[in-house]
Amino acid sequence: SSASSLITLSGEMSVVDVPHSTKLQGRNVKQIRIQSESDFATVGVLLDAAKLKETPNQGIYIEYTLQTAGLAQIGWIRVPTTSRDDVEIFLPNSDTGDGVGDDNVSFGYDGSRKLKFNGGTDTAYGSVQGSKEKELVEWNAGDILASWCRRSTDGKTIEIGYLLNGNDLGVAFSIAAGSNDFGYYPALSLNLGEIVDINLGPEFSHDVKEGCVGVSHLSKTSSDESHEEEVSSKPEAKSCDHAPPQKRPRDEDSTTIPAAIDTFDLNNCSSVQELLKLGSDRLKSILLSMGIKCGGTLEQRAERLFSLKGLRREDYPQKVRGKNFIL
Image (spheres, helix red, strand yellow):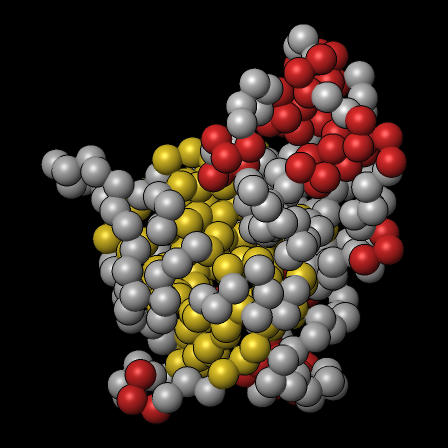
């Protein structure tokens, strides 16, 4: 089934039948409609790890039809192609609002906010390449968002870019290529109620980006899928060799706030360096207790927390507020 091409990584995501009238007319497509039933649910597209290793220089192309046009972070996650304990892995958390782009190994774009995300930071993105107008474009319901991930022509970087309704938005991320021990998987995080159609190909609404193949060329074959558990209308995460990792069980998420955090006073801190001494885990707990996004490196967490010093809670920037933020 089409739904077996997906894996739920965090929260709850429903798979909905795509009405026949909205399918790409007369084209050979594998289209799946998903709807988020959590505050910030995340789903990944399953690829065949063996095919990824066989064609390390082959780029990947995928399209999405935005049935709604609200908050979402759509992009890619980097996954080791072999079992390794020495690398960071993607661990989204719908409870805290951490999704695609909120850590160091995922890369996301949100056209509703005109921002790209990686490593706990966001940057303005979304102007059409070659256009005299440099204004950032905002996506709308019914738009077709395409994304591609490929190795640069000199082989030194992995490039991730986007197109909106066929208009090239340019390279959003350039990542040092390193070894071939990593694969890049399409993934997206959706706010509660958001609906997106995922088109896996092999045919698409727009031309496949040069140097890329449609994602269906690297997905599991139907014979592979027959060995996997069928996905229900509310798919749960399934295991497969070298698939994107699942969210950690709740009792490992450190969402319980230690009593010491209750007495933490940010106004008593004089610098980011002082916060760095608290350590990554303590900073994460403090941020969680405040309803602030807790992803990123130790330095990014400290800088995010210190940026709130002296602000009233209602003045905290929207970009740092987690999904559990309450005024």
